[in-house]
Image (cartoon, rainbow, N blue to C red):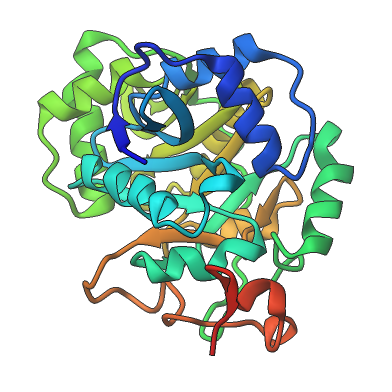
Length: 326
């Protein structure tokens, strides 16, 4: 067995990708190979594992300058237990160095991600389309989501209402003269020092943009990046101080425009309450951020190897590499 890892789509047979995904999803049928191909090609980062010329596993990620989310970690079951899945994830993470890296997973692979330097996050949410409510209800039953209005210790409920103000104008595109204002707003909101060059790249990368102005002054921004097929990541959502109601409007406008996608959101301490109070968002139970061996803020992330009460003693969650973990 000679395992080779590649980062391009060259010589990839996407019927093989489809077959491996179906095996990884427990036999669930996937009908549209063209959509799979488009999603992988439109993902800037990907890793394919080959045994000689045979595709055996892969993963991909969509990203901007600051943030990335990993999808479709899958391996032919005949090759499990050989460290190949671990190598796929580690190689993809290495290619995303310098970005905040997120993912979400089935409860049965929680322990795998914990062994690879990921920790569970308190701040991840999924935008729920009306057509998806039954599916999401089933996923919640399996263990993907927390109960509605769930609060961690120290969190407070803070109802944010939309601002109704005829002086506030929204638009779904940016002009060249917006770039500096957007850059400043994002740096102020996130206490960052992002360059105007990176902001420009992100604006061009974004598939959806929503901007808010009051008297021609920029007061809010939100962006969504996608794989052009199904998956999406909300990034760079920010408002000026004292404009929380504008944040409410921005997020509702941009998610409604992008509602054909499954939208992943990672909130921060300033805005998690908005998502948590809205019936349009569900709080993830099985979402992760990669931290490696670094220290991290436990106000945002759970302690390593954390288990909720209903997970204690669960063999599904403790199962890893063919054995029950202690």
